[in-house]
Each structure stands twice: as structure tokens, then as C-alpha cells.
Amino acid sequence: MRITRHLQPHSTHPPAALTIGNFDGVHLGHTAILTQLLDHAQRHGFTPTVITFEPHPKVFFAHKNPQAAPTKIVPLRNKLALFAKLGIEHVVILPFNTALASMSATDFVRELLLNRLNMRHLLIGDDFQFGAQRAGNFSLLQQMSAAHGFTLNAVQSVYCVEQRASSSHIRTLIAQGNIASAVAQLGHPLQLSGRVIYGQQLGRTINCPTINLKMPANLAAQGVFAVDIHINGQNHHGVASIGTRPSVKTNGQCWLEVHIFDFNQNVYGQLAHVTLRHKIRDELKFTDLPALQRAIDDDIAQAHAFFANHPNPTHKLG
Picture 1: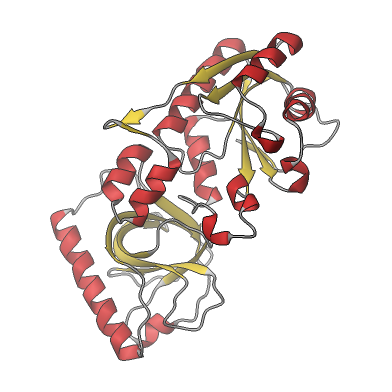
Picture 2: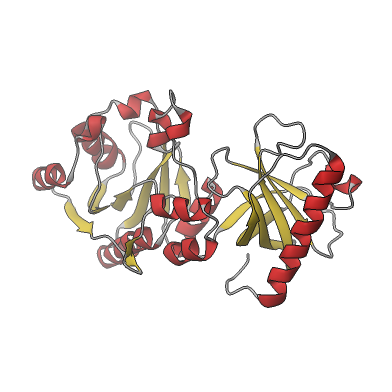
């Protein structure tokens, strides 16, 4: 899969079947759009292409009120991996900034989609809006399709147990700790991936060593979880803490710290895939190290109890 982060003014691309969106989580509704895109691309010999944004447009517009910004279901790394698994061949990551936010809907289509990406077919969700002031919609695209000769189609919403599959609803489920329902709407495991880096090694001092992964600051999943881990070609169970570590010195960075059961390997620099299975509790601030250690011991016991009743993952870990 090819990844483009900057579209050059005179770039050349093969004819593209294209869709646009943030696709946070790549849930069942997104999969319906991408599957239809892949089918059209294959039938017409086009390159299946996705345009997505970093950061999320709503995060950009919430700069004066960060609390209003949506959380992120998965890191960009996992989103790209899900695109690749489905068969997307080209992903364009547009930096959502002032220039893009102020671009008119017609210029967005003409300059970016047609002139730079050689779009021949556009597939969108039924609620898609774009361009400055969100002035672009399906009606405008129909007019431009007739004028510029590209084909156009819209995909209707996908429902899961009478609930429309949506990133916002999945974020709510994750925040509530309802991982099973979130996974049902995602259509795949809730997996977070990253390279193992050096931490403060506090866990070693309380007989609970961890691997440490940096995560986006606004990750939807926060708290302590029973998890599956795929690392160094092996699968393991463990317990993970996700958050800003309020009980220790922190700069606000979000960390994913995983204590892997019965594990003693040097895996710094390796890619780890952590799948959330069950939420144990929210992240808490403890007054002293003994209180923190007692809580960790209880977390580990609860994770072991969960895996005693759910020993085998129902998904591929790597």
C-alpha cells in the first residue's frame, strides 16, 4: 500500500476510484464503503484510493476548546493497517490545517481530487459534507460529476443491532468500558499498536515490569484492561494501563503500559500489537507507591480471572 502525505501541484497518478473520510476505527460502515470502492476499482481498472485527514477536522476546529474534540478510536498506524488488510492500494493523508479548512468545496474537487489524484470515480457516505463551511454535499458533487466526467455514488448507513454504525457511538461504548459492543460495531478487534520504547522502569521496582508504547493524547480507551499481546512472533495475555500516569511524574503524554504474564524478554524497538479484551477499571491517582502496588496486584488478579473464563482470543493477534 502506498502512503502519500503531501500532494504535489503537478503530481501524476493512475486513474483512481476514491473515497474520503476520517475513517476512525474503520468500523462496519466504513468497511461497507471501502468494499464497494474496491469492487468498482477492480471492475474498471482504477486504483482504490482513500483520502483521510490528520488531525481529525473536529480536533482542528476545537483548538479553542480541546474538551470538545473527539477522542481517537485507534492510532493512525492501526487505521492504515486496516486499510491495507482490506486491499486499499493508495492512502492520502491530508494535513488538516487552515489552508485546507478554508478551501472551497469546488476547489477541493477540482484541484485535489481531479487535477492531482486523477479521480475517475467518487464514493461517499450518505452524510458526507466537505469544503469551507461544509458547503459541499452530494448535490454539488452530482453537478460536478456531470461537468467533469467522473462517476459518483453514495453508500447508505450500516446498522448493527438497530444502531447505526458510527465512530461517535463506538467512542461512547469504549468510554463506558463496553468493549464487546464496540468490537461488534467495529467488525474487528480493538487493537492498538506501537514500538516498544524505554519508560521510567518504575514497574520493575514493584515486581511488575511493563513494556511501554506511546499513544495519541486523545485516545478513546483510557483505564486498565485485560489484553492480548502479539510481540516477537508470540501471543500472550497481560494487563494494560492506558493514560497519562497520574500517580507518577508525567508530561501529559498518553502511554500504553503492558505487564505481560510469564514474560522476560528484551523487546525494545519491536512492534507490539495490543488487543483490548475487557475493561477492569478507570485510571486512578494513588497517594503512594504501596497503594499503587496493591491496585496493580488486584488488576492482575482480575485479568487472570477474566482469561480463566475467556482463555482463547477469537481473533488474529498479529
